[in-house]
Image 1 (cartoon, one colour):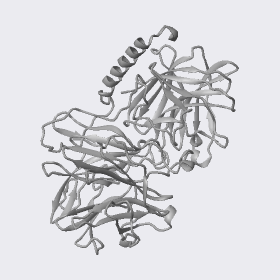
Image 2 (spheres, helix red, strand yellow):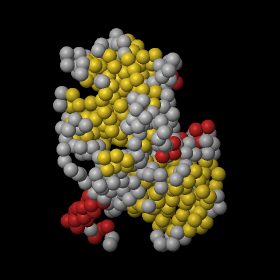
Image 3 (cartoon, helix red, strand yellow):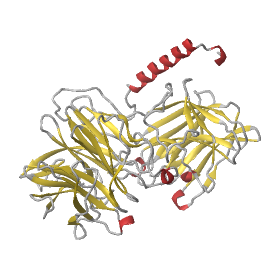
Image 4 (cartoon, helix red, strand yellow):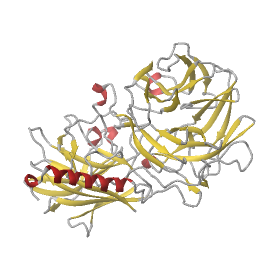
Length: 543
């Protein structure tokens, strides 16, 4: 049907049908990883995706989680759950990252580090650090937003991992850590007071822990108060190799006792630490933490927790040494109701609504010219000029990407490449410190498909290209199959049924403080006053 013959009423009908289809698709859960076993138990990780440095709270009968997002935008993801096992991505607290003159460009490893979410005075608050500028706070009446503009709570290079505490006596405190790469000091925790609203921190800081003797790289504190004790839950020992400690004191400024409350022990879970203590409506205690799985990012686990003599034990303590170890399966939390529907963050996308799905992020603040959703059942990604100083995709901001959803999966997409000029290219990419992608490029008016791979791109590694094959149809199906260990193989098809392997196996690598990601690239060589585009019809994650 020609667009000129589509009446306003017919167009509205089409949009409504697409919205219904998208809503139906949104209700579908992952085909590749579901933590809920369906029999009253769950398995870890509860989120097999890179929701790094998770923090969570309960508000009434609802649970909310946020996580680090670094340079990926939108940032500060907001997830919702009814039972601590099934989680739905409902939005983001940051639509853009400021200052704009910094984050309009790619800033790998910078931006939003470990955040803390709290609910106070009928408002959600998220405190997050930018290691190059200081500690910010955003707030909202509803977790879905809208969220306020960031307020600088405490300015300072290298101040990270903030956590507030509103005390019963009306006083307000802020605990935080230090990033050695910026502050020049590390392995220490400090506390200061704040104004009542928690929007401004005072300069009365006191160090409460020097971790150098036995708690190297202690960071990520979370403030709590229970039975007259001030508690700080904190990870120690490094991202991939550490353990969880808890400190307690009757005085907010110390001195604090400390105890190791969870480590790997005999389990297979490396570095189990950094996260959130959450208590259910039935007064069960649980702890959410991450595990670094490198290319797959820092995936999220849920551990049972109990209190013994006013000290927490996280996980199960089979050897009775007072230190818990992670569980892989366990009885689901008792939240006062027998069960809730299975939910997982979105992965597949039919692009059937004129709005980009929540799973997609960019590597910098998005610009309107990068791409636009449509009411025609596809997303239009434009072939933007390669940045002037770029040596690889590592320097490109307009990559449309999402997190890897499991350790094993197949990603297939149907695209139509509306190239207009030689030198324009698009493709399906698995992005990290090493990357590989299927590159569909126009050369001498013809389309060619090849695998391009680059390694150590954070050290200016450049691309190599495999053998190219000519493509006769501008509509093509691209596919990546990922096996345990992040081993990726690529395929293509011109009919959507018969897929042909192309290129060589590639092993995915993590990005800068994030896991590898998968998605789309659309670029062009040189600058003119127009651009081709790729119409992304759909993107599907299957087994």
